[in-house]
Image (cartoon, rainbow, N blue to C red; front, top):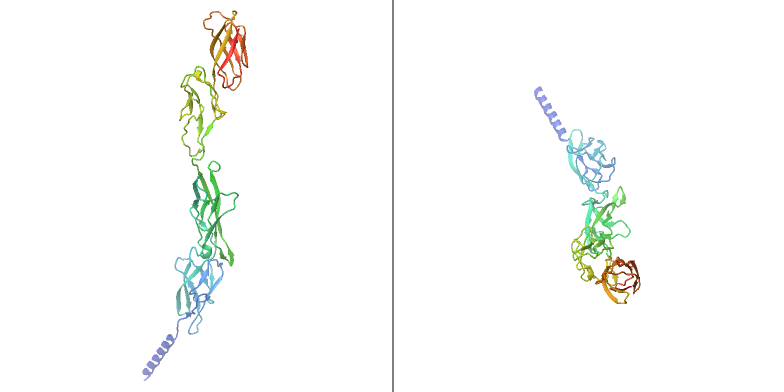
Length: 417
């Protein structure tokens, strides 16, 4: 009988324990909606400009049996822990700097326990954008080569910049920093750089231009204040030489002389020119435009000017369109000489003589030649034109002639006694 009674008591105790065990339910988090700061952090988001140490959320839940609960938060192994939780209050505090451009969401595991039962929930915390990024230029350094004959208004380059922020803070527009007399303009939306209307490039005046371009975002809030972010970059514009400048003669004015012993083919002098477009030069080719009257030729490659006729055939100074050329040469004049002997018989003689310079009063020392006369002596010489004639040696008939010649004169009359 006693044995039966003990069995009944044991069964009763077991049933009581089972009943008590079945009534120990697990704790739970309160449900929360978007924007809630109290619950299990479901649908929770946080701005990336939130300061470290800020209380950002409160975990909140309950136990069916009214047992006290504690809270916790864990992260995947090896990942950064962005939040800490105060176990009793459930207050969540930010302990790491946030950067949406680096990581736009955080995976965390929140826990609630009554000491016997523990509940773990997986949550995603979304990081929202703040206007904390400056526009960044692509393809740095910005260098562009432009031919100097590029037409006014032509596009020469497209600037590109990106902003990693979202919304208006991620939009980018462009403008050029104010510069005096800039030759360029930029489209604010597309970033296309153009030569300003009415302006032109000139390699010979300026080979390189430096233009500062500004990239500006659309603005946005950062730490509660509205701000606009900008970046600058320098565009280097290299002007390329093109064939737009004429050749330039070097060493002008040129002077050359033709001597009485010169023969056709003799080199008088050489001219030299270089292309005005020095960075993109063409080979020089020379020619005589006018004024040579067939007496001179020029080598088209070397610029060497040569005589094509005998000097005695030269008559006038070379000229072009009413002005003298920048070189001079000796002019050969036919002199008509007359002399009278004691018997008053007059004989005429002819003699060639060379002018020293056609730019000044010509002076020449020459010797008269008397054909058919074996004995002679000149005592007096007169010049029957403007100028002077001086007898240096009557026996040899050496005469110094000083006479201002017109370029059209081809002869001078002399009387000798």
